[in-house]
Image (cartoon, rainbow, N blue to C red; front, side, top):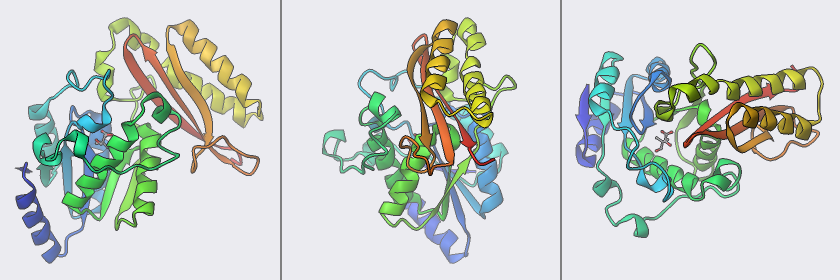
Length: 284
Ligand code: PAF
């Protein structure tokens, strides 16, 4: 596996691959890789001739009170995991090259609407930071396709909308969430949890599953289902941010015509903010 940190050699390699007629799959990450990321890489390998993974902890998507400085950096471990999966190129750009004119002066990409609701309401500016870095990385790597986890469902929808709105020439693949055997969704932030909180953590997904089961049994009193789930989570030791039942495509509250829904939740255990989601089809 090659590792490149500068944009010029990346572009040269990209040109060589293009001349050779190779298709390129891209998996952008912030490092501290777990099985969820590795699953994205495996999917990418199945779809393209060449796989590029980036590791860049993007300051633009962290709020002032968030964990940018503490965010785990585990480059050596990440490199050996990626190399063992047969990744062709690891791109590790430097912040001073990515934001060469400074964060304050940076041109940004913002997907209105989708970026302001749910997680975006709790984390103002977060999705602007995500859309901007993903757009920049797409411009650098110029992949034919890119892979993102469904765990960050709103992020996935923001990126799909950006690609459509800006007529970007690549396919976006959403990949199902990888879970521990008890259902808890894998995330880089899980390692912040205490042992006691790790025991409580799977309740988040259990609540979402119970909501799906109730909806499939015919319940349509969504606000009651949401209140009950919130009460259960608070009683289990979570501090709630939100639980929302939304339409999959628009992430707006579902109308009568919407049959594909997603239930999204965010809640704190101690200082760790956990998110998860589950899809439900009213017709199935
Ligand atoms: O999901 C992530 O790890 C990040 O938000 C991403 C897409 C790599 C952008 O920094």
